[in-house]
Image (cartoon, rainbow, N blue to C red):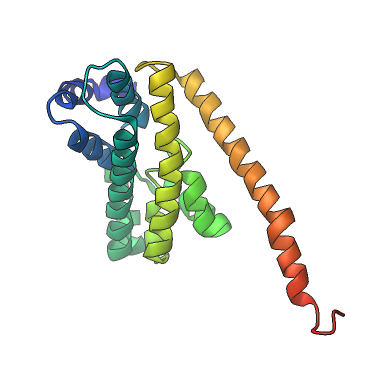
Length: 214
């Protein structure tokens, strides 16, 4: 449905890739990372596919970096708008940008539970990428920390999308995207578990010991 809604924009984007190149990737990824529900799978994979087939003079690294830059710019816009506007204005006018109070409540619950790490995970979740900057801005999360986790998450997501564009092509169905999301979440969960058991717990246990080792 979203692809049909944005069909004219997507058609313009595919044509503009051949003439404008990298800047249009940044532009659409900025839009995708804001409150506009533009699927990222119609931005990065087609660019990677066109580059892979020699139809545009772009390279994979440039495509991924532009995707990261656009994601960070869009998230930054959302973050600062929410931070400057505050919760009351978001509650009052959020519905006009597809962000009703119930979505804010869910986003705030996610942010409160997972903190800065939740920003990283949210960048890997379709639908959550556009929302996570709002509770972070309202809560006045440290902007540098927000940016770091946004860039890290966006880097992984854009890299995977670029790889899919090369391997699968420019038409990626929902089933393929669901497999990718589940695989990424499994990877994040495994990495988090390894960090907790082999880094966090040993360091915490060591910090509780007295100088005599008691």
